Length: 226
Image (cartoon, rainbow, N blue to C red):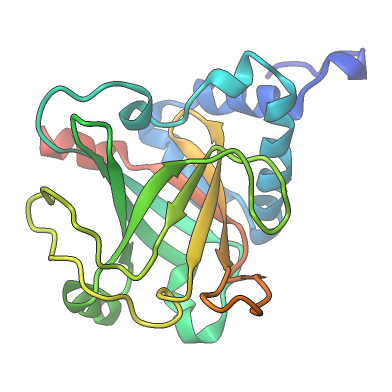
């Protein structure tokens, strides 16, 4: 275990946590989803915020897919995700999978894949796609972030979908109501996000869709793809 420096001014919680995650073997990082309770998942968002105070750390990325150029076919990364809580109408969002894929032109998209069998069946008819954007700030709070997952209306003109992925269709409510997930990198293969329902109407007040979301890269699915 590393020791926290005696000089608190030189201690950065995000740098400390990044190193701890880095020390966990890739195939064991999924255990973080079980080990961290909802309070700690929410705390992870705050800790990740201190990363922007470290110029070296802020240049690091949690995703190799988004930090390196892609010269070949569509590249896909899968993540297992868990929130610190969600509203009842979309209770499946407490535990789900996410896929992020990119093309050689640099464009990146993703898809939410729900966990339950019933919701998975619905996924095939109404897949939840989003566009991945580099963004520096959460619109509602002006807090720093690294990425935004913009759901839009769901009707994305995606050039080439990963094998077996259904064609994009119009999103159901509330995912068609300007849903944006803002993402902060927490460590290699690990991110934390906040989902906001920003609304399509000008007078609509943005509100959080659910609690903070912990996202851990699924390295086993990558090995299976190979």
